[in-house]
Every structure is written in C-alpha cells, then in structure tokens.
Length: 191
Image 1 (cartoon, rainbow, N blue to C red):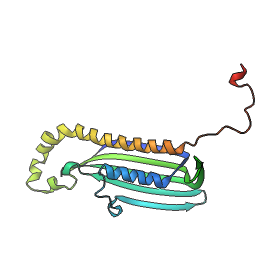
Image 2 (image 1 turned 45 degrees about the vertical axis):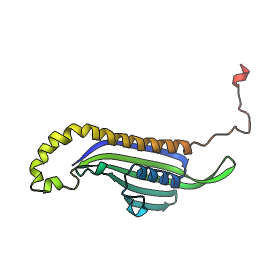
Image 3 (image 1 turned 120 degrees about the vertical axis):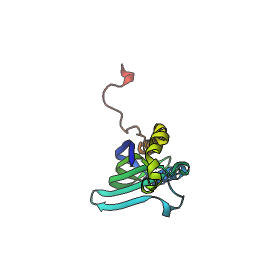
Image 4 (image 1 turned 180 degrees about the horizontal axis):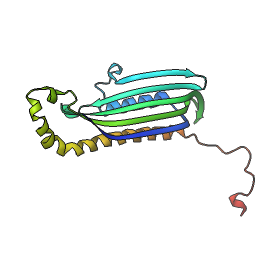
C-alpha cells in the first residue's frame, strides 16, 4: 500500500541552464540522501531516458524512481518519483566572467511525487503467520509513527525541491548589461 505524502512541480520556461550539470547535481543529491543502492551508475534507478530531436529543438523525458529503506526497516520504504520533461532545448553559448560556457536554453518541467510504501515486499500479507499479526502491528506500532515517517519524507521532498529551485535560479538568470544607448525620456536625476 502506498500513501502519497506530497507532490510538486518546478517549471522554467525559456531559461538558460546547464542540463548536464543539473543532472549530475540531482544524481549527487540522490546518492548523498541514500536514495540509490550504491554510487555506481548501473545501480541508479533511472527507468526511462528518451531523447527526441525535433525541428524546434531537443526534447527529453527522464524518469527516476528513487527508493530508500530507512535503517533497514522491512516494513516501509520511501519512494520519490522524479519525472523530467524538457522541450525546445537548444545549445547556446554565454560569456560569464570573461569565459565562454556551453549551456542549454528551453523549457524544463520537473515533477515529483513522494510516496510512503508499507509492506512493500508483501512479507506480512503473504506469510501465514505474520498475516494474523499484520492488522494489530499496523494499528499499534506503525500507525502512531506514521506522521513521523510522513514528515521525514516530506522534509526529503522539500529538500529536493529547494535544491532544484536553487540550482535553476542561480544558473538561469543572466545579468542584464546596460544598453548601449541611454534611455529616452526623463530619468530619476531629471526631477
């Protein structure tokens, strides 16, 4: 049984960002927060990576299914489903502090769903002995601590959301330089 704890969507349209660096940054977040079995890329739970080249730009669909079993607990686990969708992605070059950087410009949508899954291996329901105790275990031991587990997962999801927003805000805003020509009309110093 899975309980939806929280959902969020982060959208950026026509922004400039480094897609590869964002991917690596969120991959590191998943490893640091122990949502992957190991640091090896072969063990990373990426279930879909689809790259479509279209006339208006590149589109990507990426699905991550991150799972964490806290402290080896066999009864519940945390699941974070992170879905990426990018459209109209084009490679651009920007100059920052006198250095040229290759970036991407386009639309990006990251949607996340955080779930708390109980008895995920069906060990309690399928066992003849433990199935008798499942109902009492649920009511006496797990149900009183359910809010604590929900808050932990919500904190992890909020941490992921802030990480995404912080990264996109830092690297998406390009400083505007003064225009070559002075503005027309009255300025503040004229009154």
